[in-house]
Length: 103
Image 1 (spheres, helix red, strand yellow):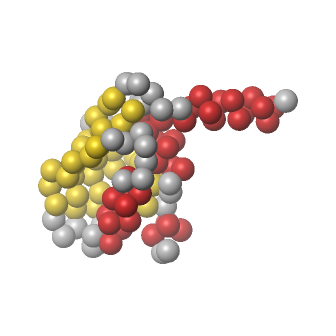
Image 2: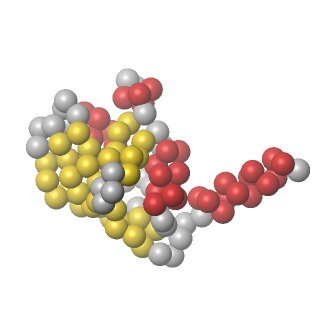
């Protein structure tokens, strides 16, 4: 019974919303290899119809992600793909989970 409750909660938490939100993001690393991995993942997520890179340097990527859902769903869905999101006010910092960085 508790497994059904957990499953129902997970389904409701991850359902695509009709509300489109824009999240500013930033990714910093020593090189762009980890950004390429994150970008490849973003392109596969149905809840992300569009994202825009607004600034790109050899160590930093800044932009905006359009996402169907709120910030909690954003964090949860990206976490399913081993992308860690940290909310620092008006910006979501995106990082690959350590295990994913080494693959």
